[in-house]
Image (cartoon, rainbow, N blue to C red; front, side, top):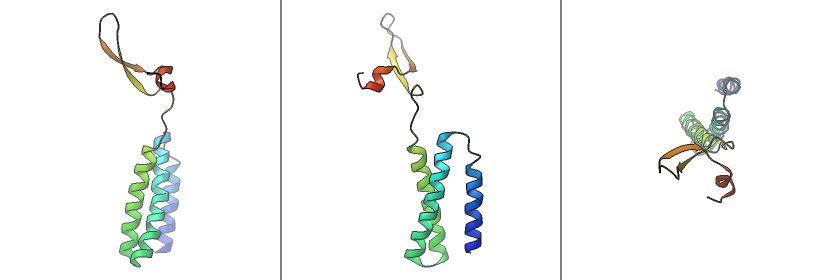
Length: 104
């Protein structure tokens, strides 16, 4: 069982290197860390294979969600809604410095 877990962790680490965006890399890293922690907690609580697998799956899912959700957005990627002063038309465009400075 331990050899299979180590092999799965190594495979996941190799696949984590293939992720292309920062968000994907953070989600994969979160899944790895969460899965390992969940497996340890599941084993400590239940003391059997089923508890370990449930803990690993739960931890991996939670870790992926947290890793993805905490990916910081780079400046310029955030879109804001603006209204044209002349026509009143509402449009979206990259946010200007007022958004980042909190002066909106």
